[in-house]
Length: 629
Image (tube, rainbow, N blue to C red; front, side, top):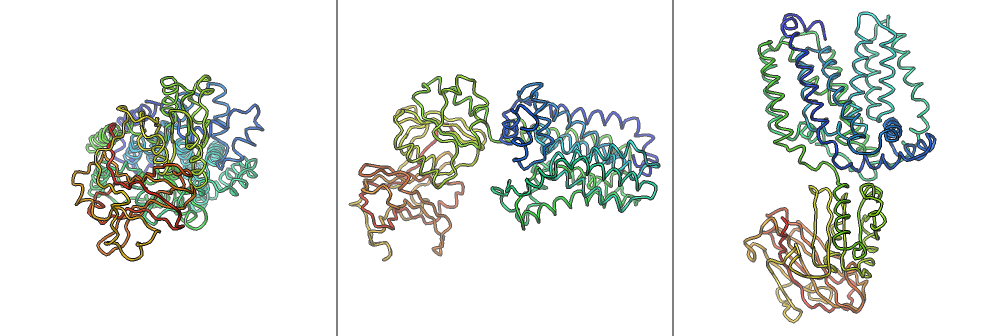
């Protein structure tokens, strides 16, 4: 603890300080150890799919040389899984336990930098906030990286600011800094920033210890340098991650504090108490250090993501997150002892209740689901007959699904498609659907998928008979060719129905009086349908016969404001639905998350830019009700 902050309060508070440390760490451990058996995330399964090698050399070559992350966690998983197996709770156990150790080192570090109250408040927030809790419950480098980073910060502090430099402290700092380097490139960055920052506070008597520790850390990491060089040449998350907006930091701050008004009120309350009890102290250097260690990783990640390659995500700032808390609570050192106990009790009780019950942490779906999807596949194979089902899944690797299937189900569960990124993948799915001979079609997705897929399936398999959703992050659904009472989707209302001979082009502008367009609906839905519910979906349908399956035609739906400006436009490609010289049905589901579109002018029509021979039977606009919602 910082000796300058312990006068008066430390003597009275010291007896209770250790009890609070135990309570906070124990609470954090309980939260982290509870329900460790939820489905592995995509990130975890990606790592676990790369541990089944026979030698360390193979692990390096095929396990993390090609991955984009340093090899530390991958090496640990390689040996840990060989010793104890691959069950979720056993793989995640050391990461959860490390999370508890991270809470302890957070308390120790900020008690040393600022005051016991600062350390306990920072540790309490690390214990109950969903952000550090979640990343301590998965077998990835984030939660454990927070712990390693705080261990590094603790020994960095002792090496720089203890009365006498000691070799074992320099060695501990060097090893923990090297661990940061092997853990994740953002924890590497934090260790590097801390190391450079320490040079500005370095006293002559500890120059050999400090520089020696830094040199040893670099030597320890040197075998990994050629791997890191390869990682820098890999696109990584920049291939799919968007550049951060200028408001990203504010979104991040809301996220790390649970997006919660309750947590915000707690922060305001603590801030008010700190304001009215504040006394000037000599802690400015540690406040500056806290800001440097929080802001610099963000700023480097932000501008690198804006200018070079997007890498900035919430998870990569977890290593520097404790330093934000340290700064926020750094003014708590002069809070009277008689206020500290009730304040900590309020913080712990409110924080745990908010995370667990108000935000529903353990009920929420945090990542894409694989265990539940695999369970649905297995259940439907047994219930309907595996040979009667054609299966398509969207996953980064079908191994992630098969991991949760037993050997018999793995043999039964073949997939006609295992990923779909739009474009040519949709064309391939069209061919699969057109030639599918089974009575059932199973479609599951574990990551974002093209919105057209569901309509493509429903056009051929119109009955949705089973569906299991996982918080909008994954879904498994089973469709059939029948149209019976078991269907979960029903047409509850027909808003518009038009056959070709009913078409009236007199109200349309000159540019649509050509064979290029087949007019449908035009008007405000609010004038037609007054009882639209959130459980319904707006669906445009066109039934037709066409000579050329590759017509290039579109079924278009658009919404326009009072000035005629387009505010929403969507279309279904005929080519994904039609077959030559046969009757086909085109579907276009129109997302209706914004009720204001009900009051905007809508246009629904067929656009035939290549002027192909199209023989529409009807065009309609219906509301489909989902009986499961």
